[in-house]
Image (cartoon, rainbow, N blue to C red; front, side, top):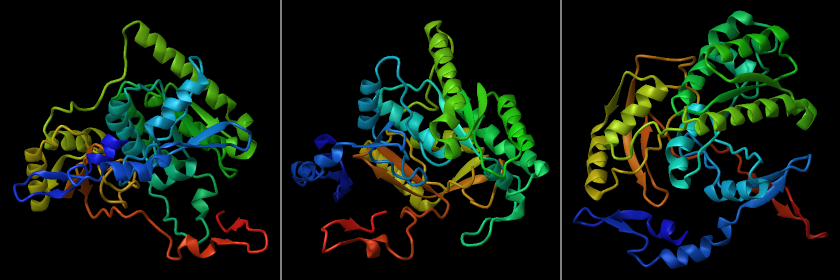
Length: 362
C-alpha cells in the first residue's frame, strides 16, 4: 500500500521528470490515512453467501474491478475446490478486457471461466429497439415478444463472446430472465450464444427465485472450469494477454481498439500525441492501458448499437495513474467524473436524535 501511494505522480518538474508523492514526503502520511481502507468489507447475500466488497471503480473511466486483496482472501477461504466469482463491470469490452490485461497482470491470478450476463431487453436495444428514457414507461417492444428485433441485436453478445475467446478463457452465458421474456426469445439468445462459441448458455432466474434460480448457471460454470483446468493440464488452450507490456503505448491502444472494439484505426489529438511522448520519455510506456470509453457501445459513440465497424476511434487526451499502474486514454468526449444524481444523497443522511441511529443511508 505504501509503495502504491508513494508512486502516485502529482506533477512534473521543469526538467520534465515525474514528481511523486514520495518525492514530497507524503507516502507515510497517505498510508496512515488509507490503512483501514485496505481491509475489504465482509457482507452477505440474503441467503448468507459471503460477499467481499472492496474498491470497484466504474469500468468506463477506470478498471471496473474489485480489489486483488478481496479476490485473494476469497480464494483462501473457499479452498482448493471452491469457486470465487469476481465482478468485471459494465460491458465485457470494458471491465473484462481490463480484468485480463490489467488486474491479472498485477495479481498473477488466471481465470478459469467467463460468466457473461445478457438480457433479452438489452439485446433488443442493440437491435435498434426504441430509446429507453428514465422516468418514462418502458416501450412495448421490451415487454412483448419481438423476435426480429432480438435476432438483430444478438450480434452484440456474440462479439463479447468472441472477444473473451481471444484471451483463451471459456465463456458461459447467463441470460437473466425477466417476467416478460418468452421461451422463444430465451431460446433464440441461447442458440446465438452457442453459435458464437460459448461453452454453455443458461437462463438465470435468481432475481425471482434466489439461489435456486441460479443452480443451472452454477453447474454450467462448474463444468466449464473443470474443462478449462483439464485442457491446461494437457497443455491445450490456456489464458493469454491481448498485448505485451513491452509494446509502445500506441500499439497497445490500437490493439484494443481494433481487436476488442472493432475500430478500423485510431486518431490522436495533438494533446494526446504530446502526452504519449511525455509518458514515454518519463518511462511509463511499459504500463498497461485502461481505456476511458462509453459503456453503451463498442465504439466511442453511445448511440452506435449492435457491433459497429469501420469507425475511427478518437483519442482526445491521455492521462496516467502511476500509483494504480496504468495509462488511460480518453476516447471521444469522455468525462472522468462518475455520473451523480442532481440531488445529492447526503441530504437524506441524518441521525435520529432520540435513538442515536443513522437514517437515510438506504
